[in-house]
Length: 139
View (tube, one colour):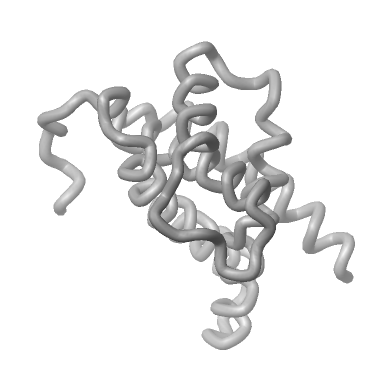
């Protein structure tokens, strides 16, 4: 598998947008797995729900829910991600939400590349709680 080889660079030294790039993929896969575990099996509904939960506004809520839960290194990674300037703006999203979602994705990418599975699972568990609140409020 691609991700099994030892990483040749220190994740803390990678640009924030590279961490966010990886974090986006890791988070989307976690959301898809979560939705399947909740019993969704219709592919169209799975796609709609996944898009709803990986969008910037949801990730920004997760970013805010993490306040006070991160260690100094994680805070620095998330802050760098939040402050990173990409070459393009958000698609239909508010710039503040977009920046916060990039901070969250950077943190997820960092933890994934650090192979810190226990901590990554804790962060993803908190994200699931935010998603569950959304799901419960819409039913």
